[in-house]
Image 1 (tube, protein in one colour):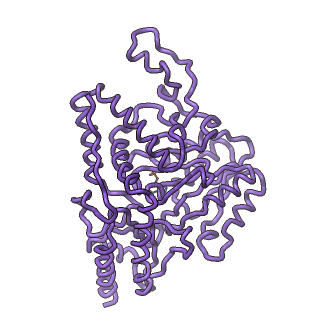
Image 2: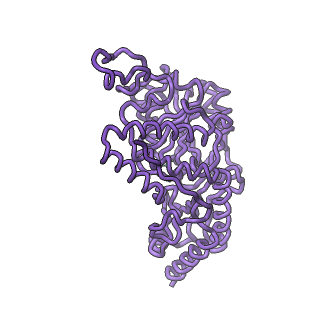
Image 3: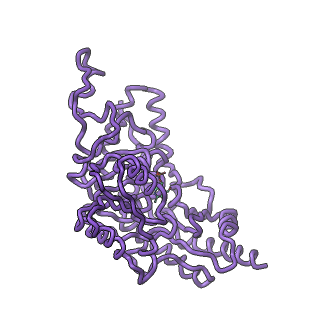
Length: 406
Ligand SMILES: Cc1ncc(COP(=O)(O)O)c(C=O)c1O
């Protein structure tokens, strides 16, 4: 007996799928995407099927996951076999960092200012595999007229760099990285580009093969609007076969006949089958069925709305917020080049204003924002509505500025 996973229709700027969201403006999708009623229902349904059918619920959710794999592949421009499920971004970064076919003397390039989930696993790989690791400043890319790719290229010219690891979008400033240009430089010097995609996938259109990205990992709990404990990893064609599955278990093996020992009687238990040569090798044991069903129901909405339309919607929201904030004395970290903009607007408060106090005051007034690394961050998604929310945000900002200056 199969049940239907919940689906719904959605419209840009309409938050009726989030009836219990306790903020007038929820601008924290770069932190945690709130659960829609569809996501809640998907989690509930998985639980119910296991409560009523136990083992007999399993096949449905295995099949559902394969459908999700296809949809995620389409979302980022890959093939289903290029996608593996992981428990979070860190799991995806660590998988490549540990399974990469390193050679003695190899070096990794990371960026200072990155979220640590895209630094720590590389530092650990450098320790375990005896590799070099170098930092390039993100400021190279953030400052108009800065060195941009020059310093990265200088590192690559040494010829020993194998992996350059960068986030598609920087978590604190919202700076969108020039992935195509970075991938080109990497490939010209025998290196590959690894991308932490969690601040981009689900809100920014991405075509990974066209960008030349070699690997990408993204957790599901931000812009993909699933739950914590899920996510995916992508590897471009030809990469998965070269990875070494340094940790592996019973579901890492090639599948044909692989489950016969559970269903087809005695004599099928074997330990000599090879490992899967595609990215599903990351799924070494049973999966997070609830998290992946939640992600699936959210991805259905994202695909129906369309990444281009979503990003356009969010960009218009942020345009409408940036100018009045700058008028009020805030300093925007958003670059003027649209190609370097994301779904995040980060600002510094007017001189003399305390960032933490301001964020606390906004949250208390029903405006959910956060303060990563010294910035005030606004991160709207498809349900946010500029017409109704922008006046509320600016009223809350004005009320706080008045109170704080009194
Ligand atoms: C760029 C970036 N990478 C990774 C993460 C989170 O990593 P994980 O999914 O492993 O918790 C965040 C935010 O929490 C982030 O902003």
